[in-house]
Length: 280
Image (cartoon, rainbow, N blue to C red):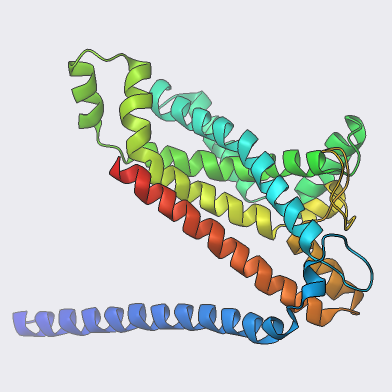
């Protein structure tokens, strides 16, 4: 094949690939816009004051208790999972050898846990947290089940964020006389915070949108529990129950709008924090 033909084939292949990439981006964006528009069109018209009453009744099907339970679930789960996941990633990246068998086992276990269906986590949480430990269907059982679910995600994203920090940062810190621990917490972690927060955002989205695991662990009581050992439904579970009953489909769509706004607010706040920390 002549040089001109090779150049022509190369340009044609590049054009085809560029077209495929652009088409994929357009399709993805279109699907996203369609889903958001569909939810807003179906649900915005049914956002009424009774839907935001403090107490749930069968008439107002208020989403406020579910929203409060969602915030409690997210806060408690992240409070436990983030330190565990970050410290585990620090051990894997900074302290263990790259060819260590323990590291390989931990990584394989984390990847395996990431692929397990959420319903399996729910059954495990029901048998262990709710039954064996005697916590019952409660916010605490649901939170610990969600910790196990999101721990591999936080650990893996944190690990990649730590790996992305240049070794020159560590070498410069060591050269100035800083110890291993001080280098990690003063140099490496601040540089990796945007990547870590990206994992936290993904984990938060999974907590907010989870239903299967929480049915078996947190329960479906539509009130704010008096303690962490009380049962309560989250917004996603509230929406699922309403749609499953089939009696309040309009309110279910309205709940979906609130859930969408809540996720956008959480993501926006996390990105804002990540941007502020990156400038420090």
